[in-house]
Image (cartoon, rainbow over the protein chains, first blue to last red):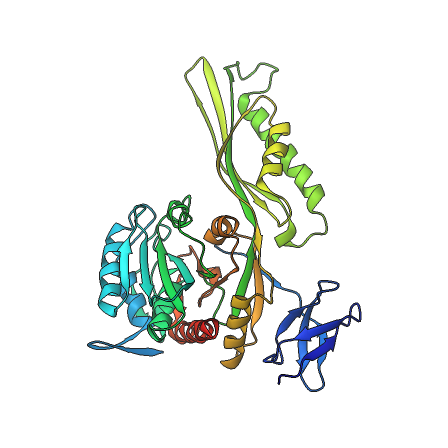
Length: 59
Length: 353
């Protein structure tokens, strides 16, 4: 049986479900407030607001 | 990354050098398309050329399709093709034969039996009006789309701004240049300046990806002696949330007496950071020691045209520094090319699970 891992959204305190194969560094989206969150640790689960997307030019 | 094939092994660098040896500026891709189709057949793909001249190469027969879509054409300009000190130089090395070569090498390493069918597409006319992508858009939507454009081996591109390419034309009687009335050229310059000033106000405080920029690419006045016409060709780059329809209404309301001729228009695209393809690529980058950055770009790519048609998850990925696109210094590090092929291979394996 797979145990569900959840972390707490630092923006809105919602419980955010992480995949069973979640890894440190992965980005998840809070289903409550839409914030992009980075998985900083799995055990215990810890989420932080993800660094913003980089802007670049090209194509 | 070297992949064993019948008759030896092939690397992304080998494939790239072969493609660079055949110049393929927009409109003259047919020679490369024919050679690539034959090469891919030889490597075990089921490869064809579609009515637009795109190369479509399929690997496996599974029901779920993952499409890797790049382009065959390059901008103009000859750069001597050479391999020097771990770097491959040539027009298209970055934009975008390098990413296409990396994808072909990545697919060669995947099992052909299984639930996934991998389709590699080499489009024509990406640097033009996306004639190739329009043809591809008539196909059924894939489950996942990876657009092969240079993000850097350790980054994934999630979005591009939209674009409207158009012309304003203003025709009137020729006036004496000492007369008090403004010429058609004066009036055209005034119209463009008003448009740019309005956008500058709207853009205040916004980051480049979220700005709406109007760039004039050509200004011309022609005449018969009795009548004269001022023509301005321009591009409007559009952020997410500002659609082409609203933009054309905005232009129409401000064009005055000028005629507006729209050449090309696509909306912005912006994929979520936790979509399956984005996640597979970022995990693969991290596993190979990269920081896995996420980017959005102020330009436009075939992704803009295909995502609205297919409504499928899509991202852009490819090794290479896009700051070298279209420059006389276009070149790609072989180490980055091979790392990019490895990332794509790992991501494809994850998407197939």
